[in-house]
Image 1 (cartoon, rainbow, N blue to C red):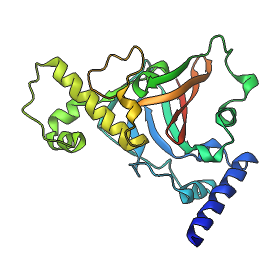
Image 2 (cartoon, rainbow, N blue to C red):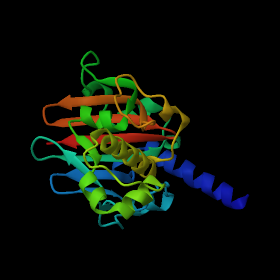
Image 3 (cartoon, one colour):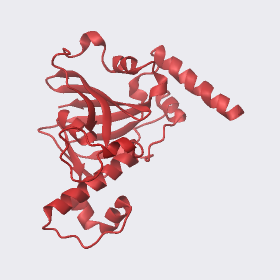
Length: 237
């Protein structure tokens, strides 16, 4: 019980630091990062939020963003770009509006009449709205079938490379499993596909209350929810 009380005090202390703006969202663990040269993911996946990690970042004891390069994904965007997604527990904020205000204040946001919003959206389509076409790298997996088997978490039969639907479904299953590794476990709601979702796999990794808060030429600032976490999404080119 003593350890639980200490942990609660730590959480309350961090919440207060966010409230007083001693801490900001730059301290939130970066789950996914990409640019023209590479894609990187949080090296501690499956993601579990760590109070000590936030404190170390605040004290400048980290010399990088905590991500490592990975070849299992590919991304396409017109021109040079930077894109990253950070995730943090909802507990640290009073509500969603409080969190969104840390990204961009209300008076600086895009006009609500022009703002993009989706109650439920696949993470892949959310990224597309941020100008990123993101998917699993099937060239990598077809050259590394053991990795494919591990990430599918099941045996695989001989793959017919001419069966486009099969390859598409395999990519979507791999992508779903990798999103669960990065952003958190499967949820029952993932079996209910959002409107206009044309994926073949039986589940879609769903984000809730996706907002593009700011859209101005080369910059997009967005937020979303998944389970007990808020996502901070940044794009610039």
